[in-house]
Amino acid sequence: MILPFDLIVSIAFSIFCFLIHVIGSFCEASTISNVFELRTTLTFWVLRRKKKNN
Image 1 (cartoon, rainbow, N blue to C red):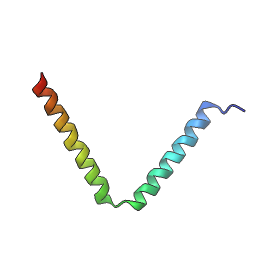
Image 2: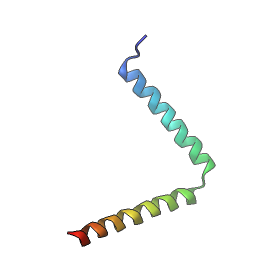
Image 3: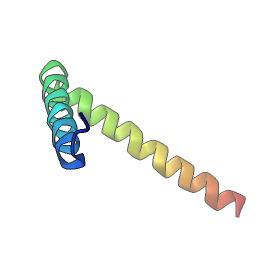
């Protein structure tokens, strides 16, 4: 039995949302903000490196 694409996407999306919810309840908001901060810092660092190379 082949599932329609829409059904697969909706199931995957539901699982994804559920995982985010579970992870969110385990992790504190501070952890999430730290990760976001780290990612932002890395992005700026990479952009700066690219500018130096040009």
